[in-house]
Length: 284
Image (cartoon, rainbow, N blue to C red):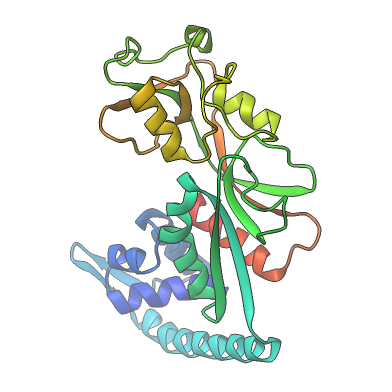
């Protein structure tokens, strides 16, 4: 048994319902149900009686609940003492604008549940730095998208997302189910900051930029350039769009990976923990 599986068990026991426990744990129901069944298999005993309205503890579950609750409280006390002895701790998380919601809404709460005394700060980078502050040493860990130069940087893929071309809803391509990259020839592309990773520019623009166009640094600036000026930009197909824009999937472009990234030199325990939390959140 590990502490994570015991926390899952205690949450289900407290809520008397797997769905409510999953919400409390910031996860989906299927992986929680699997974890509980794995714990039952390991112990060789049923811990819950399942009913259409929820679950109730079996005698074996009742016995485990008291022990697990005490053990988890002791583990929290140990963590608190170690944190106090180590002094104030801080983790700075870098993110691109379109990944910020994943950090603030999903990963940080889970991380803070594991490390409640850590000061978590979020640094939002612009499109000129796909490492989201890692390369410049501004952050400890980052949530970003590929492709970019990963020299000296470790990554863990969290999710792969197809990409498409963002166009106005009155564009001739708007009604297409998909479009090949060759079908975008002759279009005006966004211009990203000078010095941006060449691989990043080649992937996310796909064509020669309009040298007369202003430099765009944020996702929202790019989307507004499409809306107002008909400029062409690529984006993940799940990118939220303002009214008047649609995204048409690219038929021949490999997907972009949402990744958690860290410097290979000096990967701290807090960074390792954040990577584990991110993988658990998206792996579920």
